[in-house]
Image (cartoon, rainbow, N blue to C red):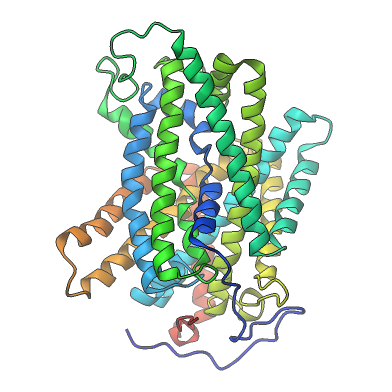
Length: 469
């Protein structure tokens, strides 16, 4: 495609920050730090919150659906890594689609991912507020969301190195809790009488295995991996991005899948395939924890899920800030605000503050109108999150396919990866709930209208010149 020129007109920079193209994000992350950030955003405890839902849908075959979902998402992870190697930019999906397919389509994909990344901290703020109310019921939900929104934003404003160190501590704490749970399960089953098929039934129980139920469970199990894509938004802050983004993205998917499969396999050994009552579905994993570790482990798991959402919400806010920075620098959004870098910590401060405000307002608004909307802030936000995520996933797979079609050395195996990624993500996307589709459609309509007015067909306004070290 022809080289796109930079719009010569520059808007006035925001106070205390600069959209000067000589200013760069701080390249301070190692491969290990990037994997840790990805693991915290996905959460080592990722399957615990949706364990009961998957178990009921898949007749107890939770571990099977987790592994199927891992294989499915690996196709998209490889496409993300391939695109990051070709275009190491903080704009992530926006930049990949804009450079490989069309600038305006890149804007549309970027706008959809903004929905994903804003809803991430929103639902984490709501979850943390609800969990905190179980511990200290005095303060109201609205006070708690203000507290957690302030914590997320304050920590993320301290710079990428601080965020990385904090993520490492959070990840280590969650892994320790997972180990405690696995040890408690091992102690429990040691004293149990293991009948025929005891160790294989979680994978395949002929009495309850039904393919439609497995597909239904897998569509939910995919939520375990949501967030791995945000690794690519740190392309301008990681050492050797052309190598490390690909490795980190695939590693996050693999580690998440294998660790999640181990967690739910252990839970299934204890609980079996019996369904959870509808009122206990959200706390199903904590119920299993109480069965193997008593009230102490029950409370530990509850607290850990709060901490996990704290880390995930911070990571989502970080990623949203980087995505908005890429779109601002490319002039898809006002450059003077979204493309500005705060000089001291070299972070997109304006974007982090904006995402914090939007997440706070969204959590409060959804909770206020919960009765009319048919659910709380956490439930509604979680349903809508996949809308933007899977549009972005399909866009990245399509961009990867276009990139490979221009590569004379590409073979059918390489081409099959993005094709399968598009088909799988498309299948999941069209089966989202109606409220998610309606909310997502409204968001996309607003974004497309804004983009059409701002750009007015002049794609030359979009600056997609690659960033160089």
